[in-house]
Every structure is written in C-alpha cells, then in structure tokens.
Length: 313
Length: 135
Image: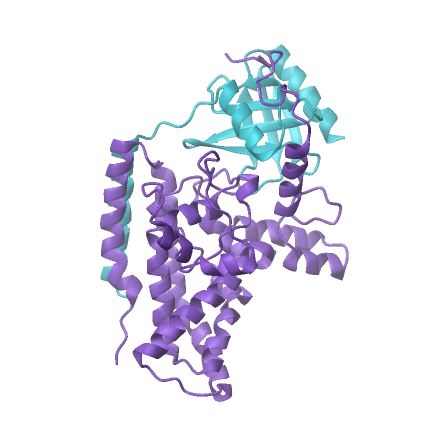
C-alpha cells in the first residue's frame, strides 16, 4: 500500500481556504491580516518545506538506527495506521509541551507563535530548525513499537493537515462533544494567546483529551479575548530574522554563560530563565498576574488615571 | 525538490500577499495614549502609565510605569506593537539631537529605535529617565 503525502495533497486547498478566510475576515471583521505578516508566515512555510526536504535524511537515519531494536512489525493495516495516528498525536502533545518549556526546543517553535495575528496563514508559519533540536527523538517510540517509517511520516502529515484549519478566528465554538474531544479553533486560540490566564495551555495537536488528562487544558472565555504573539513580540517582518531571532538570543546567552550550570540552564530551562532572575518566564508572568488579581480592588486599578499626561503631537 | 513546485509555491505566496494588501491595506498602526496603555497593561499586570510620550509620526512611544518608574518603549510593527521595558541589560546607548531620541538596543529584531518627540524639552526629560534607568 503506497501512502500519499497528505501535506502536498492539501496545499492547493490551504491556498483556497486562506483566500476564503481573507475575504470573510474583510467582510465580517472576524479576523485580521497584515500583508507583511502574511508574507513572513507564508515564506516561513516555504523555507520549512525546502529545509525539511534537504534534512529529511536525519529522521530516516534515526529510524534506520532504531529499526533493529523494534519490538515487532505492526505492518500497514488500517488499524495500525489509526493506532499510529493516535500515538503520534500523544507524542506530539509531549513534544509540543516540551517545546514551550525547554528553551532549545522553544528557539525553534517560537517562530510559529511570533505572529500577532491568528489566521490560516499563521498555521503555515512553520520553523526552519526543527531538525537541529532533540524534537526528532519524540518520534523514536513509534519506530521502536514497530510502526513502519512510511506510516509514521504519513500520520505526521495528516496531523499537520488537521492543525491547519484550527488557526482561525472565523470559527467560534463547535458542538460540545467536538470541543470535548478534538482540538478546535477555540482551544487553539487559547494556545496562541499571551494573556497571562492563557499561557502554557492547550498543547494538543488533534485530540484535546491529552490536555484534559495532563492538566494543561484551559477553555476560551467569552470575557477574555485572546491577544496573540509572544510575550516579547519581535519587531521585524524579515523572514531570516523571524527564523533565527531566538537562536541568536540563545547563542548570546551561551557565549556569556559563566559556568557549566548556567550554560545548561540556558539550554534546558524554560524560556525567559536567567541566572539573576532579571527576565521573566511564563511561570513568573502567571504568578505576577495571580498576585495582581488577588490584590484588593480599589477602583483605581480598572480606571484610567486622570493624571495620565500625553505629549501627543 | 521539483523546481516547478517551488516556483508555484512562490507564485502562490505572492498572490496571497497581494490579495491581503488589497483587502486590508498596508498602512501601519498609529499609536495613541490609549493603545499604548492597553498593550502595556496586557503584559505587565497593573501597568498604569504615569506619562506617555508619542513620537510625532505615531509609530513609537515611551511610557513611564507609575508603579516602578520604569520606562517602556512601544514600537509599531505593521498593524501591531512590539513592547520593550528599557532595562539596563537592553539599552546599549541613548542619544538626543534636539527633539529626536535615538536608542541602541541589545535586541536582534529591534537593534535601534528613533523617536521624534514633540519638543526638545520632552526628549531631554525622557533621555534623563532612560539614563537613570540604565544605572
């Protein structure tokens, strides 16, 4: 059984759907596009495809190294493909969670989050450096369990195709049963949001049940509109800078590390970690927010201060 | 990879960007005191600007947090804003030429920022605040 490349097959539909979403967003006001941001996102996808093709041998080399150690051969039946799809999504959850909690992985994954827009072009804003992170090894269990390599590649492609349509503000909430089991636009908007209440949540690829099981699920609230991007938003549309900004930042930190411990923590600690605590991790941001919310409400907090002066020209 | 596939992909990118420009325009966002306060409050819980200085072109602003006297820089990027707290670690140099304030930052995507403030007096005040923050 020859398995197709789901992403290649879906690409024309991606383009059509982006056009449809743009027109719908313009007419309805549900969603925003910024041409330079759209260009950056789409060129990130282009670079991802080229680099992915050039370095595909790395995954194949890892798989070939592990093949002699697999426990069985599960073959290519549809049941095996379905089981591989579910297990791949489970491993994706853990890769994705680690990608938000380990700076080495975040240096790569941050690119997907660096747009302040949330539309279908954001889905295509894929990073260029995944092959240079330990992320590759999250798929090793599938090889060791005995799933054929083409099946693993196929289900990964299906997973990516599924995740395309959830990057939109055009779709509100879906029926309760769908929201309970599947990753949806509503759940994924929370994942892309920088609101303190929404940080580090909803890591699922296809099945939101993983977040519900492992305590990372946060529901979108009607009274808390998501704001998208990263906590320190990048100030460029230059696609090379978009792709490399966190790698450059991490390299500078590693260069200035004063001990092996510092070096290792710059690599493996959560993004925002610093030896003197002068920067903020998402845990700090959430804690600050929680303590702010716990303060007694005085009335002065919510209202703009009358004393604010503006030297607007 | 098939060169035709690559060329087709790039043509698709160009078409989508052009359509986006036609439908949504290319005018960048202009900062107002309200938008600056809103975007700073989003990331700094309880942020309350004691004073905000908008650049004449509306593409950047400086804001002083009432709680800790820290200066924050807000820079328009397309239709959105990028925000930086001007910490000693971030600011490499600050210079003023009349009403124009120039900042050099240790930031890969925002290495420098230039703000033409309404007058030299205002620029001088903000320059002093940033220098004090750098100590």
